[in-house]
Image 1 (tube, rainbow, N blue to C red):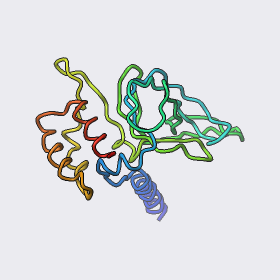
Image 2 (image 1 turned 45 degrees about the horizontal axis):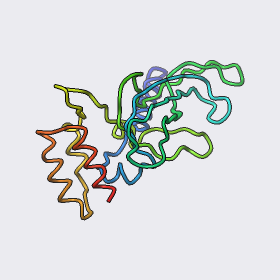
Image 3 (image 1 turned 90 degrees about the vertical axis):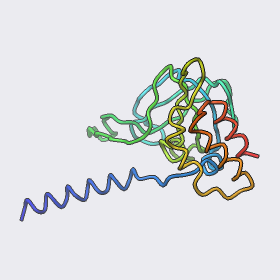
Amino acid sequence: MYKRFIFAIGLFLISSSAQATTVKPVNLEQLVGRAETIFRGTLAESVAEYDTEESHSMVRYYTFTIEECIKGDCGESFTFKQLADGTFVNEDGIAIRQRMFFPTYEVGKTYVLFLPMAHPKTGLMAPIALFQGVFPIKVVNGQETVPDLKARSHFLKTGLSTSNAKFLQKSLGAVNEDHSYNTFKGLIKKTME
């Protein structure tokens, strides 16, 4: 009986964490519409620490040097706070292991990020639809590309309903051949019209 109870608890915990990290796929219109800020930037600094002021959790501060602000007010650099993996000691002296399934970024790498407004009480922020709001930029044969754009093209074009739908369908259909950064930026800007 005890083994069944432990098994049931384990199964519950596994299913709860799976549900907590399930995110509904969004299309490009939804990414753009929900984002307060969209920018292309290179990660300059990544610092993890315990946030005693707002969230009372282990957080990571990401500071990006802005190369191009596509939507919102980006400034020359943009810092946001996101929940982070790690072990920390809370105010009561209890060690807590925090396991998060949020995007991480590498210093020196360039990304296009779709970010919402920071949470008003905790100051926390994560990309729209988590990993769906993160697009790494790579240079291939001297051209800047969005390498996973082709793989995500189905999700980006599903559910289109505006006057831009035909343009986006045609452009995302062309993603199979051309997944350049400039094509992607053009799609974002056309969606914002």
